[in-house]
Amino acid sequence: MKESQPAPAASAALPFYDAGRRFELVTGFTPSGDQPAAIEHLVANIEGGVRDQVLLGVTGSGKTFTMAQVVARVQRPTLVMAPNKTLAAQLFAEFRELFPHNAVEYFVSYYDYYQPEAYIPASDTYIEKDSAINDAIDKLRHSA
Image (cartoon, rainbow, N blue to C red; front, side):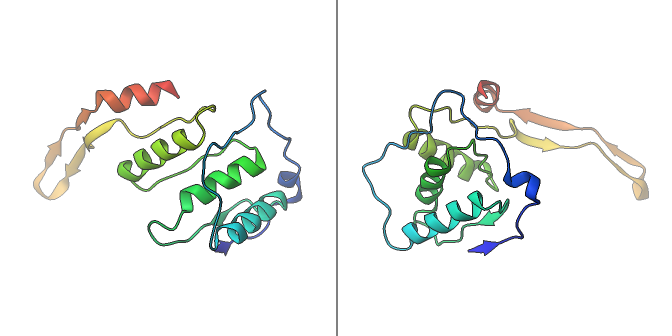
């Protein structure tokens, strides 16, 4: 697990977020293996003001479940970022199952294809912008 430097003191005093509904983790599983120690470490760092952390693990090691445990423990709104739409969709589905009573939203680019406009000076060629929007993803974006 890689840690960054603690945040400035002002960020450690962030107000507790409570919009009337607690983050309720619904699962029949309990943390096992390295997960309990990772959860304790991540929670302690968040409560100690560490703003950035990285949770490392091989595929299938329970990183999503570990993150969900941390969210439930710290009771703070959480932004989970993924490097691609496939993983984002997987995380969205898993978090929606783990937090069925809470808002879990999915926000990604709605483009299936995007080619920005370009100019190639060597051949004096202008290429127009071209794109294709995925309507299903666009609807999910607007639900957030």
